[in-house]
Length: 116
Image (cartoon, rainbow, N blue to C red; front, side):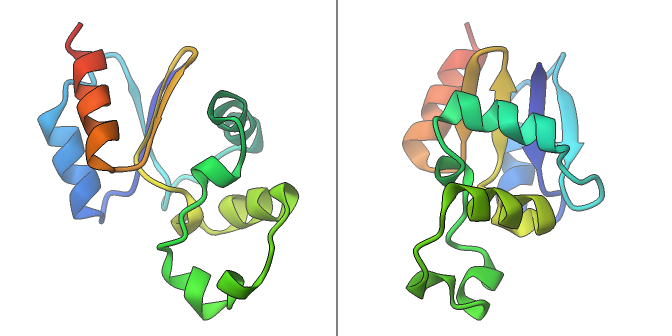
């Protein structure tokens, strides 16, 4: 699987898509096209956990009071499946390689990976 999961209204996602060459990747816009459970499972297996894919910056994270709750992996999975904002983005999957989120070191590693 060669796929980029992103949000089209996210300026950071737009910048990352513009700055990198994703030729040959399937672009999956997560707001208008829900993430299939089997694809989320693949991402989880590559990342090691659903928590690694979970965004604690999502507005609903604070609204729902999730900071005070110890979420299980199954609960995190369900939040990501039911509300696209809970996916840390972008997520880039290329076979057995995954890049999650927009932290500087992750983006540098992604750029280096894509340029080889």
